Length: 197
Image 1: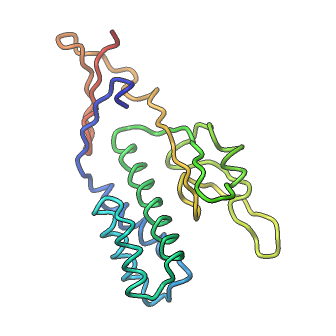
Image 2 (image 1 turned 45 degrees about the vertical axis):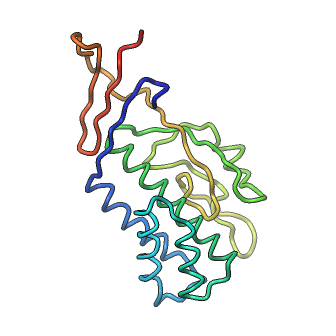
Image 3 (image 1 turned 180 degrees about the vertical axis):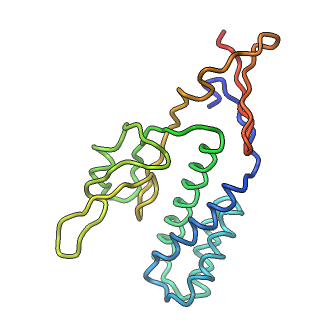
């Protein structure tokens, strides 16, 4: 955003706070390697990690010590939950400042990347609330795939992220002629940018 001349000052919003808890709960509920009666505790651990700023080591250590999860499995859960929470918070903050679209960026995470993410979704512009349709999102037990709408970082081991499409931010706003600065104020952030030189 700095390269585009934008300065964004974030403040925490109720939208972001409520989405963090809800998204973490939904994602934790998908964990199958930990007994269901412990998922509330895992939810608290992941929330604490998010508040600490992506402290994956805390999640890994807690899962190993409290629930006897094997190290490699704990690392996978930690990375997956942290990535999902981070991407969700980022999308909520974008919505708070009026950015609705982004460009999908494939990042290789696992040794075998998802072909649809690498070759089909990569570089596509998408609505941050809706995501993109991945025709091979879910591998079926009997073989084959089922498609569904997905967002970056949402599927297990998905390391994909996005680049913001800021082409519509502040569209139709007039610059302040006294300072050459345009300013857009949202509940969670103030976005300001200087007129192009």
